[in-house]
Every structure is written in C-alpha cells, then in structure tokens.
Image (cartoon, rainbow, N blue to C red; front, top):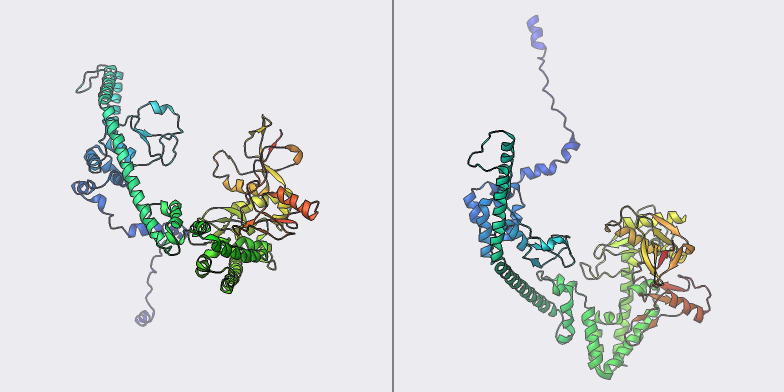
Length: 604
C-alpha cells in the first residue's frame, strides 16, 4: 500500500532561485556606456600597439595632428608628452617647414604656439594670428599687460619633478644631523645657487641666438600667411567662376556678376556645392544689371521700365499692409520672370500689347504666390504657439498679433513679434527663401512679466502696447552716466517693451548682468531726455488715409522716416489732432522693429 502511494504522489522539487531585481531606471542611463563597451572602433587597439610601430606612424603627422592626438586619451598623452618623444615633434616641425624649437621651450609647447589655438594668451580673444616670438605668446592688440615685457619659459615636467625631489631631499637632510646625501656634498643654499646659475647661463646663451631665431620665425610666419592667402584666393576664384556659370552670358555681363565677389558664399574657402548658388540672392546681380541697363539702355529701356513700374505700383497700392510686406521690389519682381525680363530689356515698343499682357500675367501669378506664402507662414507660426493660450475661433492675424507671440529666427537669431516674424526675410537662411522660426521662451516670459507689471492680461496685443508706449528700467543693470547738456547724469537706461524683450534675451550673454532682469515701470516725470530720436533710422511708417507712395525711378515704396514725420503728415493733411497707430498710420512689419533704447535716462 505504501509503495502504491509512493508511486501516485508526485515528487516535490525545490523551486529555482529568483534573480535579484535590478532597478531599470538606474540601468537606463548606462545603455550608452554599455553600447560603447560593446562596439569598438577600428582604431580602438591603436594605443596597445608597440611603441616602435606608433613612432613610425606619428612621425608622418603634422604638429597640429600630434596636438590633437595627445588630447584623445591618457595613453596617447603619456606617449606624446614624454621627453622620449621629443624627436617626433622635432621631425614633424622639420617636415612641415616650421622653425626649430628654441631651447627655452619644449617641442609640444612650441608646436601649440605655431599650430595650436589662435586665442590670445592674456584675454582669450579669438583669431589672433600675430605671434610675438620674442615673448613666445599670442597677444591681442588691445592687451596692455605686463606679460608683454616678460618671457615665459617652458620646462619638461620630468625636469621640474626631478628638481622638486632633489630640493625636498636637501631640505630633509638639513633637518637630520650628520645626514649626507649620496652623490653630492652641497647644502641646500649651494644647490639653489647652482640651479640659479644654470638658469642664468641658459638665458644668456639663448640671447645670442634669439634675434636670428625671431627673424627666422617671422619669415616663416610671413611665408605661411602668403601661402594661406594664395590658397584662399584660388578657392574664391573657383567658387566665383562656378557661381558665375549660373548667370548666362547673353542676359548678364561680366560687370553685372562681379558684385558676387563680395558675397559670403564666394569669400569663404569651403568646398563648392550647389548650395553656394541656391543661397546666393540674385537681387544684387539683378540690381547691378538694372543699373547698367539704365545707363546704357537708352530712352527705349527707360520707357519700358516706366511702364513696368506704373503697373506694378498700381498693384502694390491694392495690397493690404501685411501682403505689402511680403511683396518683392520692382527689380526682384522683374528677375522672377525670365520672359518678362527679356521683354523689358530687349523689347521694341513700350506700348505693345504683348508687354502689357506679360506684366499682367506676372502680377496675377505674384498675387497668388503672396497669398499662398502668407497662409503657409501663418499656419507654421500658429502651430508653434502653446495650446490653450489662443482661442480656436481667433484668426491667424489675431493670434500672431498677441504681445506674447514672440518668435526667434533659427538662422539669424532675430527675435520679433508674430506679425513681424510672418514677414521676415532672412538673408542667412540655409535654403533660398527659407523660413525656420521657433518660439522664443525667454521673450515670451519677459512679455508676461511686463504685462503683470502693467496689470494686463494675456489677450493684450502688440499694437495696444505700442499705443501705450510705457517705459521700463531694468533694476538688475548697474547705473551709468549719460551726457546731458555737457553734464554727466547718473541713471539707468529706459526702454520700451520691445527693447525689454531684446534685453531679456541677451541678458544671459552679458557678463555684467548678475541676475535675471527685474523690470520696474517708470513715469515720465522721473526721466530726462537725452540725445537720440525714436526709430530715427527706420523708414517704415505709412499713412492709412492715403495710398502708398511709389518711387517712379526705382519702383520701390517710399516710407515715412519716423513716427514723428508720419504723425505730422496725418495732422496737417488729414486733420487728425491725435493720430493713433493702427487707425491713422502703421508700421511696415517687413522691417525689424527692435524698439527704443537709451533715449531716456533716470534723473536721479
């Protein structure tokens, strides 16, 4: 019976031991390190190779490559920065025609001076190409430091460490009576005097060859600069010839295209790509061609150009302000249509129906392009706004007209309000007519703080803040002195709300700005005017009661110089005693409106 029960009862086995649970959050950060340990590069075993093989490889490298290689890992630094590897540096300097290393510097330090960083050794200013070989350093022109008259000496780390060990041994021997050091009978004082005499002898000996060495270094530097300029000139010439092929000869002449030599895509030494022609704005070439035809085209070209300007000007007068900011100039409009440009340049009769039909057809296409581009930009800008801050029933212009709608161009880093960013034409775009905005978090936070100071809500528009014309000061900025009638007035800069945004964004880049900007509202009685005029350099104001003015010679829009000029025009011509922006005049959103800065100062 027991045997039967034993057969029917299943055997009980011990469960397997459980694995220790590991915190996944802790291992999640080590995934990158695990991948790096798992996958090695093709040259990962290079530091483990024999020294004689490494020396055969390193001897063919330039001094700049040796400097970069010494910063790769501790293993390479131990090999290259050792005194045993000095022959590598000397051979590299000799192979690349560099001056030999002087006796008062180690080869790595000499190579770093010639081929390393170009920052100033005193103030850190970048791109200092001038080397003061007598001082063994790079100094900017603005540096006035005692280091200009002192020569900095460089020594091997092994020599410095050996000197420290010997000095410590002498000091310990002086503390123990009747203690004699091996291989020397000199005391600590005698040891120091011997080392000082050795340093002085080395310096006196180096003075005899310093003049010749400096002359040799200066000749090498001049030859290297000449070679660098020749290489850059050849690269510029190749890029210019490549870009010049994009402008055909029958339509453009050499005098029209030569202005491209001043463009940044030609002056650089980068490899030639198709982007060099895509990013090049043809407006400069077309302007030069138009000016040449105005001089050489005769009366017939002037008549055809006047017909084009008349029809295009009538079209611009029908556009609303926002579409007007997106519209091209007359020369750009002409260059966008090859057939129209040929008809204006080489046509016969300025009253021919064919010319009028071509102008009307080009204007019709342009009107559709402006509307499409405006809607495309508005959709992109609105999609960047946080959800919930803008009502869904609001139009694109209402959403972008809010004061909190602050954007920044990713290419030129220009900060602007929504409507100004909508009409922004970036000259540093990666693509031709590219548009890549992003929401400015710092600018938006600055506007919200200003609205809180004023007691206004988020629904406040940029136009309302422009009408209020409130003034603020930043309490985080130090006081400064302003000249008022020949007398220094101590105070702070007073800014409008647009200038406050620019100041808040650039506050982190200014070293003297200690903390975040703290804004305070300023009354008019607390300020005194100083020299300057608000928006004096901007020709961007226009009257809403009369059509825009077109220059008959160039076909461009003639804007009022500043707000005072347009207000005076509204008062005298349209009899409006209190002109108001948005009702009587407007600002061209196609022009940057950075705000009023440093026009007022605190009186006390």
